[in-house]
Amino acid sequence: MATGLGLLRLSPDTFWSMTPREFERAASTLPFRASIPPGRDALLEMMKTYPDRAPEEQQHG
View 1 (cartoon, helix red, strand yellow):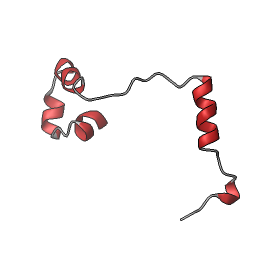
View 2 (cartoon, one colour):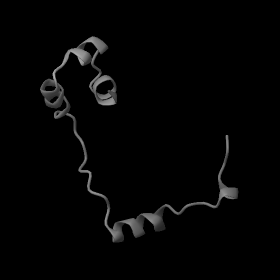
View 3 (spheres, one colour):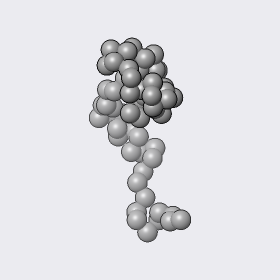
View 4 (cartoon, one colour):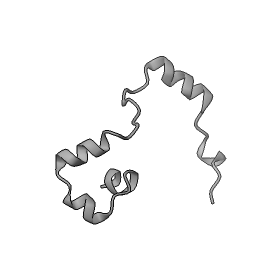
């Protein structure tokens, strides 16, 4: 539903009247990134670049 109503901006009537094949074809036009998770080296680099802050350091509000 998020893809159809949000990303494709289909009206509810159009979304619910589509066949699965029609919806798949419409959704296949969206530019998705590959869903391959980062490797260990990339993850470690991200952890260095964007370290977690201790709870007392986080800003609330």
